[in-house]
Length: 254
Image (cartoon, rainbow, N blue to C red):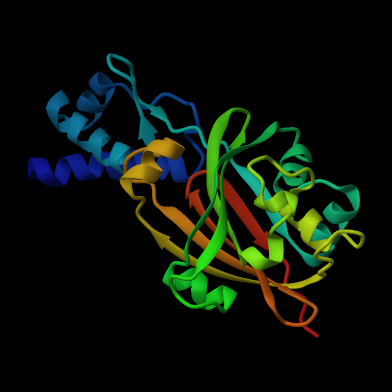
């Protein structure tokens, strides 16, 4: 068997153990010496096999330390209309409520609030002209101090001006609390979300901000919120590392 084929066989054996649960997140991978003996090869060939798994995001290691199965700080997000309405009643942002329900500590950091030219995909969803000014709120979501998601919220300026959404501060209960407040200036009721999802490899800025290891893809979700008149009132553009979330969508079919 060639060296190339052998290092891939080593990677396949360890990958199978990880996917089958025989190696759990945080468990050490077999040592280089043990693998070299098991496959009757050199440690250099073993290292090539381990490097493949690191590139896939299945193993991580620090300088001079043994490789371990990458920890997966998963958060389970459940998207249902009932959940959305319950969180509105409780006055909590959806992300915070879902994370807290799992005994974890949520945090949102506001990175920027600004008027920017509407990007093509955002303009189509907000039904504005491409390049027309829109308001964006850029946030970083964290769980237990670890970065989990980048989320940019876009709004038509005339809808949110002179509200907390346009201010450079976190909004208690989230933007939806302001949009739906029956005593507030906007008073819209969200009745539908449309979400477009794509999977891709992360950009350099996303790797840095979210501390994404080599080989891990991201999901990009574009979620548009519609009010009772069928008008789009918010577009969320989120980037989510593929190794940190489990999503469940409940779709009621009339």
